[in-house]
Image (tube, rainbow, N blue to C red; front, side, top):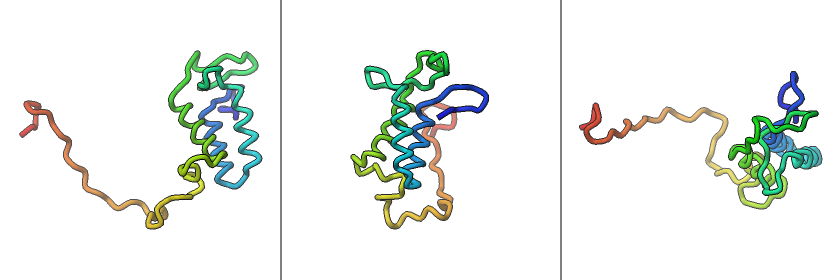
Length: 123
């Protein structure tokens, strides 16, 4: 998936996010096709380049393979393969039945920050 309209480059994580969206919308064929295209960014060791500039086929940022990208790819592959119980997360499957996502969470009190002994404000 092309990242910006002003440049010919793609990013694996954002493409994986699009795969998750297509899957959540029930557009399975398009999701599988898009995930297959992003395999061009996969290295022999299984990692993914964060992004790629075309037509040069240069990694961008140079030589970067981020954990964020890896996580996004794992989520997308799991969603399409339906391998783990978490695979339906973005389709709303397996969420607790009492979880109400229609209203904002109520305000919850914030615990005061813990302070190291001897630091300003410590008791």
